[in-house]
Image (cartoon, rainbow, N blue to C red):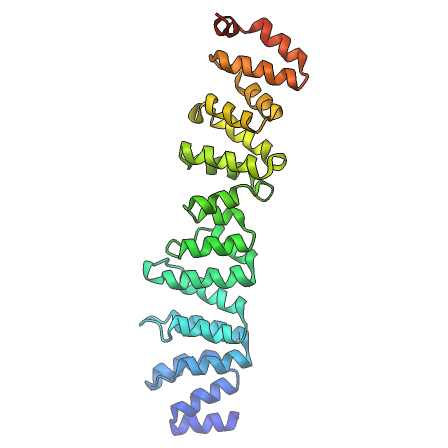
Length: 289
């Protein structure tokens, strides 16, 4: 083959030279020679051959073709097809990450395809890509559904505005980072927040109560103690009321907050707290006037 390649070079038969470079593994020589000879082979077909012979070199060659100065020498979608036909998810991912690095609107379909293939085959890779916030134009409803299917509930919530999808995923507090969850509620309206808190208690009060109390405490002024008390009373959770009201009672000017805290503390048999509030709270006087 080396002798044949030397002859093809001297005879100036470009298609044979390119094939010879591919056969001998000299993939880095193909593009420089093609430019020099003014020859443009079927790069997609050539890539298919290289990928079968040497997958890693195939990925490098595909990147070279996509990043050519005068513009890509191959259709990016067809390159991905070549990799996927050989079930080369990792190589297809590496290629697309490089090809899509400029995050352009016209790349929306390719961004979606990259995330899809990883959410189906390598969810943790997709999780990392989404976490790096590399892309802006992919099909968010589609990706949110695939994230939910892959049990990446936080990513699903980050990519949806659909109330039904939010409710389905927000109840998975055992799978969500608590700090992230608190910040997420800061993006919701008052009505959305109360709906979500209600869903969390309805679906799994034992699992979700602590998160509900933390959210209620952080956003108490925004959501309103009256509505939060009604919500917790709806599910008859003296524990939730006790811990939520205990976090705001010392700063609250609302007599109802003080009284409901006494009720909850009594049910929780926290009689020291009952005595303290009865002794120290001037708000109780106004409540009973």
